[in-house]
Every structure is written in structure tokens, then in C-alpha cells.
View (spheres, rainbow, N blue to C red):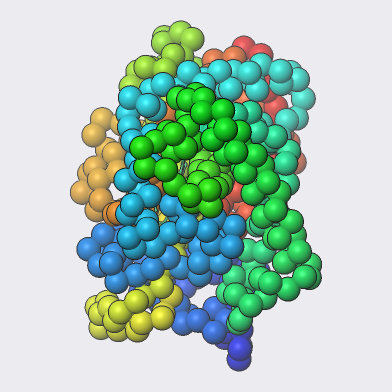
Length: 430
Ligand code: HEM
């Protein structure tokens, strides 16, 4: 039974089990649910038509939600957190780096890193596959986006510091709390310093050398329209963070799903064996791998809940969202809704084959929105698909994965949905 408290509202229930909380709001109140996180009234909208309304048709009437507003302390005016004209301008500058031709060029790095990291796995020993996929995607992001090899440990440490402040985003006066030299705030500042130091040195090196390595940062540093050093840092930090963890989680979840469904794993291996050593142009020859990644994104969406804050009034059915109210769009709920996904918790890649894609079989288009929608849709979507499909194929070609008895998957829904305490599997050579 829900009992919102004075001052904090539903914050304690939300923080104690976020997935259960958003699910129970939908069960108890339906597609439009209302609750309160700290001082903020929140509307949870969990119908594909409402997703479209907020992210596409009425998008101009919203800004980013509380978590990404607070993330500006680290990401500044990078693409993920910028608003309005600054966002539009930066998106135009960055977009060419995500052109399909460029992604095809990055694909060989993706395969090389997936192969390099997975080739040294110890056989028949429990392995934290999530740590391994993070290494793959971070090394890929470093090379393709920044043109450098990044210190994986340093970035992961900084990210852990930043995530430790996530839980405070909804507290009253959280903006002011961010400046305090205590606990999580100190870690937030430390993570920020570490990341900015790392990125600044790459930016300075590129600007002084004038060397064009074909990576995104070179294009931004050496382009006709030069961004300021601060803008470059914001963009590079954003791409480094947004461009690795989500894909790493997707790939780890996909490998977990194969490990617990050995017959699907065998079919995926047949598909990959027919292709041979996966190459940059093989994504389209791996439809089952793609279907497995789709199911991973549906069942375990790395962006499990998106947030917005209303700038103007929005009528929603019989309700009125007021300026300042928060809106959340929970992929976790919509992707598990039996109205759109029969047996929603079952892993069934065949949903995605033979014309059954995102909007297939009478399913509304926005019943699946792992990459958001509208003008703020993920700029790295094709990058992520390519990396996840080729990474999956590269790993399963070499290894058969088994679950570790007594180590079930546990979920940790922070800014992204990630495995809690790692994702442990046993790789066996094929
Ligand atoms: C499976 C992997 C990924 C998932 C699930 C994912 C998810 C998302 C989502 C849901 C958004 C929209 C956020 C919002 O509207 O509030 C977003 C935006 C963004 N993503 Fe991704 N992402 C992934 C991979 C990537 C990659 C590989 C990159 C870069 C290489 C990237 C860079 C970005 C950027 C820069 C934005 C902000 C775009 C804008 O507002 O113009 N993402 N992502």
C-alpha cells in the first residue's frame, strides 16, 4: 500500500526498489500515474501514444528531467544535456560523425576490440562478462570517438563516483547539495575532475598536433567551425560516457540471455558459423544476432526510464500537467506490457524475425523506445546496433557461455540499467 511521506513523498519507496515502484504505479494507477519524488510532482506516462506525445509531437514543451539537469555539472552543454539552440547547433556539428559510412569505418575497431578482449578469457572459469563488455566498448569509444586509447580503469572509477550521486537528484535543494564537500558530492567532484582531466589532455594534444585520426574529436577540433575548449570538453566527455556503458550493458545482457537459453545460443552459433569471421559489413547477414540484441534491449533496456520537465501546460487525457512538473516515461514498464508483448518476460527472439520488428504485428511504434524518440533520439543508435551485433557474433563464434550456478542476474537501475555486482558467466571454448 502506497504511503507518500511529507517532504520526501514517494522517494523512499522509489529508491528502495525502482523497478518494482514504477511497475506498481502502472498496475495501481494505469497509463497515467501520479506520485511525488521529494518536492517534485511526477507523472508517469506508460502508453506508446503518450511516449510519442512527450518525445515527438509536444517535445518543444519539455526540457530534460531532473537527473540529466543535475548531470550538467559533469556534461555541461554536451549533446545529452544541452537544450534549445545550443543543442540543435551541436547536433548538426556532431551528426556527420554518425553517418552510416563512418559507422562502417568504426566497425573494424568494434570487431578488433571484441576479439582482443574476449580472446584472453580464462576457459571454464567464472568471468564477469559485464566488466569485459565495458572494456570492449570503452576501448572502441576511445579509438573511434576520441582517437586515443583511454585508461579504462580511470573512466570506470570516475563513472562510479558520478553514479554514487544519482540517488540525490530528487532530493529537495539537490542543486545546492551538489556543491557541498561531503560523501557522494565529494565523489561526484572527484569523478568530474578525473574525467575532465583525461578529456582535456586529449583535446589539447589534438589541437596542438593538428593530426586528423579520422575520429570524431579530430573532426570537431579541426573542423571549419571550431568549438570552444569548454564545448569540446563537454562533447567529448558526453560521447565517452553515453557512447560506451549503454552498449556494454546491452551486450552483457544479450550474452546472459544466450547463456540461459542454450538452444537459442546454438542457433546463433549456426548463424555466425555460416558467416565465418564477422567483418564490418556483416551486420545484415546476422538477423538472429540482431533479434537477440533487440530482445536484450526490450527485456533489459539500459535507458529504463526517461525524464522530462514540463515547460508549459500539457493536457493528457483528463489530466493537466503543469509547468515545472516532472514526467517519466518508463521503458521498463512499456517494454514489459502484455498488451504489446505477449508473455512479456519471456525471451523470444522470434518476435523480431519475419516482419515482427518494433512496430510489427499491430504493435504501436513507440511500444519499443530503447533509444528515445524525436529530436533528442540517441545519436549513437546505429553505432550501438553495429557494435552490439558484431560484438555478440565475435564472442559466440569463439565461446559457448554457461550461467554460473548460484549467481543469478541481479539488476541495478541507476541512470542506466546495469547488472548489480557484475554479470557472471562461464565461457567454454567451442
Ligand atoms: C544500446 C546503447 C544505447 C542506448 C540504449 C542509448 C539510449 C539513449 C537514449 C534513450 C537517449 C535519449 C535520452 C533523452 O532523450 O533524454 C540517448 C541519447 C544520446 N545518446 Fe545514446 N544510447 C546508446 C548508445 C549510444 C552510443 C553508442 C552513443 C555514442 C557513440 C550515444 C550517444 C548519445 C548522445 C550523444 C545522446 C544525446 C542526443 C541528443 O540529445 O541529441 N548513445 N541515448
